[in-house]
Length: 497
Image (cartoon, helix red, strand yellow):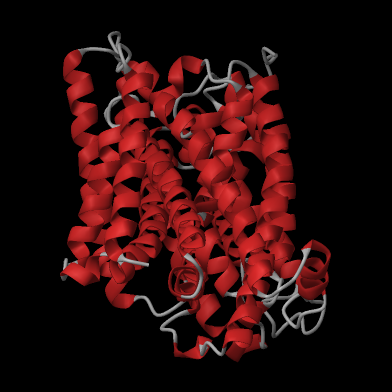
């Protein structure tokens, strides 16, 4: 497929998003609109749009590519995710609605104090910048290889173009715009994965029933792994429980996805959003794993040397853009672009919200719509775009792993202390020594790293997604050791539904 045609698709796609941004932000560019969409979002739009945000380009490319090595073991992790989403709906959302939060890290200030609050918000900023950078990097290498390399455009320019386009359609309307654009982008993502299965099936001369049987009986479809608990990171319990706690931390304690939930009218609609989203999320991930099995079967049938690819992440784009017809290639590019930018635009808005509220105190001013505050918000939004650019360039130099593995490994270190901090606040009535919290949250990942690096040598245990559980537990224990008796925070007042 020609680079010029791919570029034209990309330009048309963003022109459409910018037009949507203009319509949704027209006459409403104040901070309340940007941060929480005036708490007037429709739950079904939030639920549908969150699918695109949660999936990202990692699910689109990296999950199918990893099937050869790990089969369908990732589905064990997805089942854990589903349990985590239900816990968020039943435990975390009622808490956040009771205390009427804009930034969820304000809870830490109410429960523990100033330093705990700033530590929690800082952990989110670091975690989300790293995670969003990894996700955008994934689509950027595809754009670079199949579009911009043809004109010798430097990689950093490709990243800059992506971020400028995202900034253009998010800087004014913020969350209100993103709820609409993410809904549209989810349509592209779902259409793309379904059509990709159909295109691959037709190329392999399979009908729907034969496609199902082909995937089911392939060497890639093993889903549950019960062997070698100590030595294998794919064991069911490691994947399942890792999935639960990764979801609690990366979704429930993440301003990005929770910001959308907090924009719903009430707790009832927010919970309907989460539970609906959970069912669709599980199904879509199963479809992406099926795409992976079909991709490897297609490669085998057509004599494509998958091991000649630099990384398994290149498998889907290689086949879609070089071995299928023009229309499947267009569908793939639209799906990949939608998956990645639905995640990045949302993250930029959440990062801006957290910094403005948690560090600049926008929620404590009497006039939140002051023009100076709006101007400051624009500067913060641009600054985070620049930071993501720099992180991607560093990641390009040091990364030698599948991006999906890199994301969840990084999350295990960065989100773990946040998990321990919130758990301590919610499940104990003790008070932390507030000034020690930053040091505890820095020490915990260091201890976790030492244990992770040496667990095989010391006890023959291979660490997987449960890394975040260990990190959170160490944080919880250190907080317990240094804490003192207290009465906790009274947040048991009724929730409006």
